[in-house]
Length: 445
Image 1 (cartoon, rainbow, N blue to C red):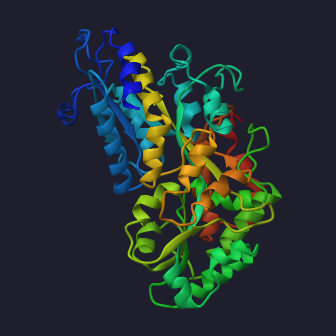
Image 2 (image 1 turned 60 degrees about the horizontal axis):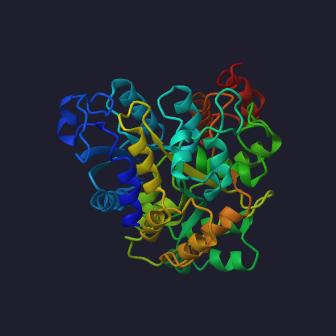
Image 3 (image 1 turned 30 degrees about the vertical axis):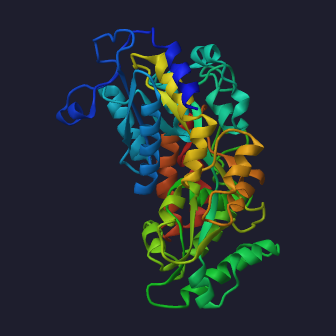
């Protein structure tokens, strides 16, 4: 890996350019972007590249920090500075857009798959196709779903020859299960139910209520209030956010409403963590039976002192209803070193680097190879890593941006109105009758 990366960057060593400033100047308001640096680096002179992700927890941040240190040590004349994004949810993307406008954003940064169209249409990230073609990159090395969005042409809204970035990794949802609470409650083990083909919504609800019956602080289940967890319930019932061609709202379909109704019913009692509260801390404290999240939560869950594992989502009318989550490393349109920034994107998505990240517990390699999947199964705990791979293999809905609309506008309203339904503040019949009219502006209506 090291020799390959050294060779890769040596090709670009003749390109004289400067990158962003160091962290020492970032806090005093000094412009630290590559674009703002006017000094040109001589051949062989040390060049600094700043890059950013949004980690789910401190343990995941440490994973990426270690990777950055290793890559920085292996690259000739290149110094990497890793900056973990501190904002959760859409706040991370908004902060990036603010910093891009101000000229203080990193050279390379990660964004969720949902936001690629928004960033591309704002001209704040580079189309890297020319650099990819020059380096021998192949789109086919990565999952088709993410690459379809990353190659979409802005003018047509259809997959084309653009290349807005490379997928960092992929993930699906699973249920993290506190096996000690399951045993104490005397309810059926979800892993055994799944193995027997009996893991459906009814069995899920029985486990939730049974664990909660232990009383006190104990709750049967928790999920976060962003679009992924509630969207999984809609997918589970055969619905979704959009029409089939992703050109209009689909929240009012009978299938979407069926999924939302099941979620509302779950939260109508006291067996679950209240909707909108972060369920991860109480799960890690040992007071929650099941916690819905992606592979990215594994580094944090590995720190707990109770017996745990992962099981797939329960079967609904349309199956387990999972997501293929992904996000991409993209390049700041104003970087002074686009070739080296692209080379960093390639380095961060090399199979060996992805294997290190997966081995430490965060997510699944985004490269399509049986070798990568087989290796992923060896990274434990959890023992049942197959639950995440089953999610990939069971026709999950691919996370993706709205090329025919504005995802930020759509999700902002959707989040608030679905929370109102789940918490009982809005009648679900009124939601079905009016939500697509209320969100039509996101599609230019």
